[in-house]
Length: 188
Image (cartoon, rainbow, N blue to C red; front, side):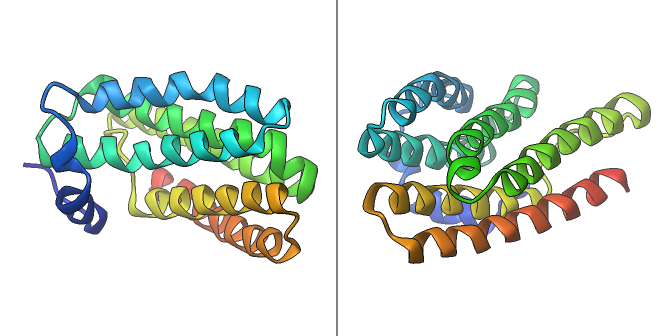
């Protein structure tokens, strides 16, 4: 049985019992990939309410698929590769659309650039050192800060709240810090 994290226990007690055994973690990752074009459409079309709802569901699915894989011992090579890619595409597209527009291009480029460096570091580690590509604790924390920060930014955009936008900014700064630390972890 893989090592379980705090959030795995929380999700195991709350959400996972409602997910049928026929639904695999890879199905949930594929769902996250499928939601990205719809999220982009809603945000570009200015339908922020649907964009927010779909983003929240998609971001939550990241925690669910990982917890499901670990608690049901269904970790696959496909999931190890494509779950992080789905996360980066989800966050990266919304950051490109909304963070650059509301909080500035520098923060958006920092987030996207660090995500690309994380991918490069992980693949380098796998290819040249034969080490497993697996999520580090700093990467999980980073994803939480990014997801909550982007979610609050979407709420700020929908409701015109400067306070939520500022909270979002600081959560995304924390996400940047944990992304930088994650790159260091992959390099070790």
